[in-house]
Image (cartoon, rainbow, N blue to C red; front, side, top):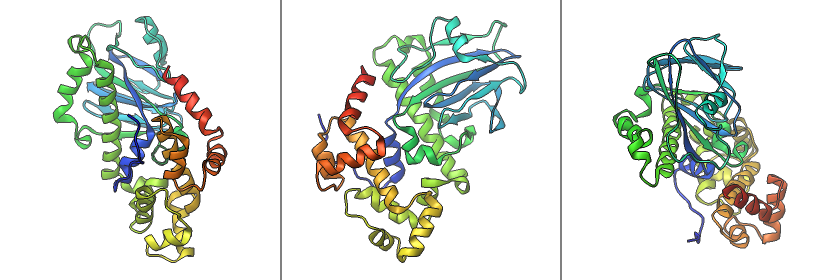
Length: 327
């Protein structure tokens, strides 16, 4: 059933997470015995690793080197090249070659694995067991949440809040018995989504001062009110003056602080956010005319021109591309 109206909430973080339109799946379960090192390539996706047992080192170009222990989650919101290893400095094997050795290819956009894939190193036993999940995202570079996060999120087990349910969740996605039941891909995908969402929430709770961009604005006591107003009513006839009033500020200081926090002018952000919503709505099959009306444009023609200017394609071409990806 096609939605009849845009979804509006008082929770901008949930709005941003919804706008990501993640297509998640479990990539593989790796059982590794030292010495070992795995290279993960750049992917247009959120890549998450959950350490089921043991510990690993994680590092990469322009990334901090971190020690990751049992129960921790490590997330790469923009899918940067990185390495997992029993110790830093070892020669790494590409993850694609490991998957190929057990008869599987690396993840690609729009692909979901229908059963858990396991790789075990040649040495007897496993010092470290890692669950890899990957979440494909559409137009990730334009999503304000993804752009606001650091290149690497390390969430200790005590911070992400999943420990009580982790054993049950892993049984759902890691056991052969569970994967034989229809619906495995959907269940695994939801759990992969949950790992990312809880990691973001933990980041905000424990490392809020490191937030930048949209997240920085969301946490600002005044700019956050303006952002929430945009999220609640994206189709309103917003101006710098009306947004400044939401923040209880005058226009000039509001514009300056907004740019310092978010990295965009207020009206540029309004347009970008509307386009994020438009992509989601068009992907759900909502007609262009209705999307245009919901987002406050005078006509579908005006909306289409703005969409093409921001997104680089027309709304109709975007719909066709998404249909091709789903096929």
